Image (tube, rainbow, N blue to C red):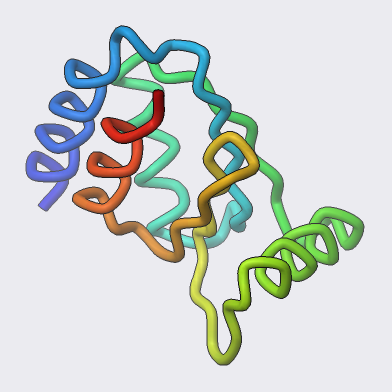
Amino acid sequence: MKNLFLIIVIVISLGCKHQAGNKIVIYGSEKCNHCIQLKDDLDSAGMQYTFYDLDVNREKELEMINKLKKHKIRGNVSIPVLDLNGKQLIIGADFKKLQRVLKSIK
């Protein structure tokens, strides 16, 4: 499974070299396996991001909740939550969606 994540992240990275200015913010937890794996894969692919640990940062948890409300996302939400350029949210570790969204950002 780890190899699959790494392959997907590398594909994302290769497909987005011309979009190096993308700002990726990850809301998650240092105790969340999906969050840890996502960070490791993004690091391996050389992609920059900002990570906020919601277990220790209540302010960022509220910020994430407000962004979810702004985007009309309700109900149960899993982490990680990715904010791409302040315009698009991705819930969970959906790498295919991340790849599509990064390719579509101009």
